[in-house]
Length: 312
Image 1 (cartoon, rainbow, N blue to C red):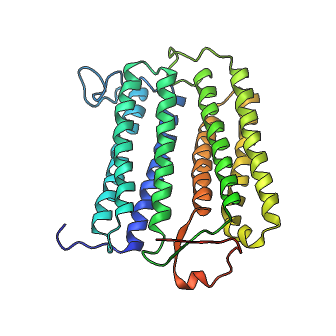
Image 2: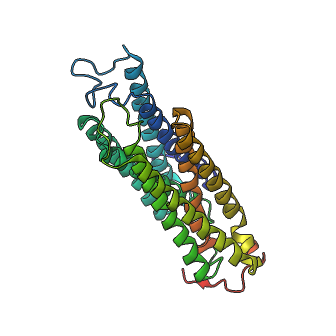
Image 3: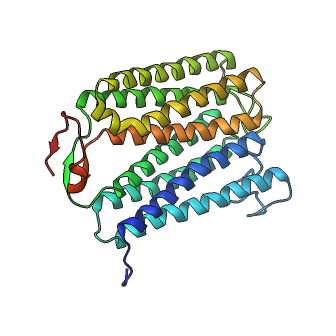
């Protein structure tokens, strides 16, 4: 690509911007649903059969803005790919992760169109959200990998059993998020007054979701207790572990408040934003337990006695 060159630090900035954009579009998508603007544009990719762009109503304008933001996200992930090609030195792992973001965004665009064409079927809406969270996980991985040095020893910062425990917490968190989408599909904010709802009582869905959330929090508390006897490993995970517990407890509080106050749209939007942040934090925590490259200066810092060198 000509004489364009990109430093690792600048490339990581690009990946961070892509992550922020992918997280933000989840919130803007929720805004579309919470304002009953999901069918503000009844066609795709045009807004209507006669107009590509239509802002004649507030619902159409909100949906159009969300589609415009999808374009911004597309640019962000394409820049992540192009940046990986001119990064010095070039790394194949970063390029493949960035390409995965582009593929995921394309899938989201198609799925978004299908969601409109099936009149906001709750299964399609759920799929839209879950693909978004998969994209966030990929973007967090890209940011983390872009922040690692290009050479240096590859070490395991925590013991395998602690790593497995963190993965278990991630699985439970994923279950909580999936059950949360079921609550959405059964609840009042489906994107349009006439949209189909899941054939499940919202009380039942909320109860199952609440149990899933509490189970994930309990698993994280157990992990925190285990780490009290492992000070070196605790230092490795303390930042992300504390962030996870804070966000999870805040999310649980907001969830109960919104349930007992007839799910006001503003609180639901905040809850969606919190779920996105919680998932990103979960992925970051798990990545922190996996083998990673560290430079010689970093290796001189105290590491767990169980840390193992991993062949490159």
